[in-house]
Length: 283
Image 1 (cartoon, rainbow, N blue to C red):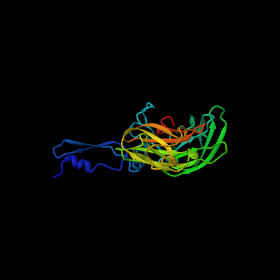
Image 2: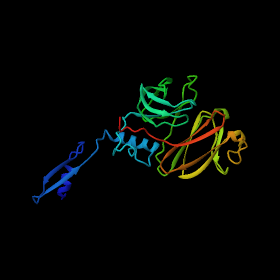
Image 3: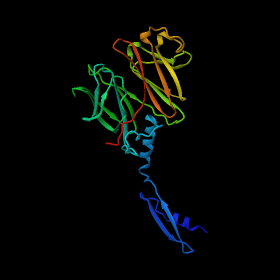
Image 4: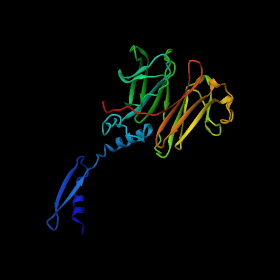
């Protein structure tokens, strides 16, 4: 014979979205209480997708810690994720999406937060931070769950941005590092450990990106033109201006970016950053 609690559970409505309590008389005249709290089935894919994207930007931390709220609002079911990096050497810029400022004061070579957008067409506009003067604009169409980095390399000539499709990794035991090669004048580039003993990325083509899942580690990397390091590791014979080092701290479950660019003196630069997601608490 089934217990009274089991009988109560069978009679609970599992389609409801609210918490409720059902009281049933038992054979001894006592009452069994059944409490059920269930998320609507329609909301489960949205929650799963949001958890998936948080793994791309900062799975090791709470996205709401810096906002003072317990939970961030969930993104739309058709959300896409887009961030901006620019190489304008003269000024900070503001990022506008469909006419609304979404990020302010973005520096040269600084990766912006991933902005949460609905799938479909959008206008991405960059304007000078101080003068609020339009610098460039570009149309972009994104699909649901798409993750994109837009690199504005030459805004003076109104060149369209380079579109990078970014990867996510749900392996929480690994860290993911993505390199963006925007130092086009150097041609293909190798990245090895600074001691030259291990090749990490070999012959990265200009205006390309490459991603790798690695163990958590503290390491210094060296970027060198492939022509001056044919084996992909070992000594780099390039002049000092064509070499760049970056100290990395890669933690389990997190995602990072390494940006290769040239400065005003044509020196190679390597900038390391942890990926971030915009806060939606105030939206």
